[in-house]
Image (tube, rainbow, N blue to C red; front, side, top):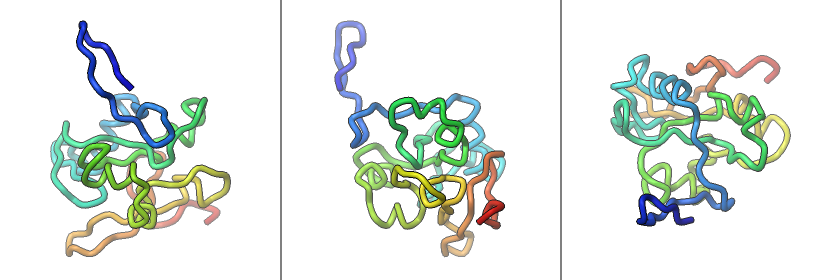
Length: 154
């Protein structure tokens, strides 16, 4: 898609669905950055690989791609559906999610559209880098924090 900016046009990357990327509200992106920085947005790291991104680096992206009127869906628009990833739509962790990389799906960073607990971002854990270099299985909750326990009912 091309967007005109003061007589110039620039290319805006699109997700595979043909829809433009979704932008979360600023307050939510700040909460995601604080989660990824263990309480400090300035120390935010890519939630998939651990690369230091800080307050402004990387992109907060949905795990489940929103279709049509999904912005009104509180689950699809919730913080449990948002992750901070490094790269662009074509490279690094975000690029792998956009390309529907199987490893990134297995680690919970993108989720297929559908109904049921396997498609609910609150029920699908993510594997984040741990302090020893091993992955740590966590769930993203609606308060903007990591949880070591699955949500109730799972």
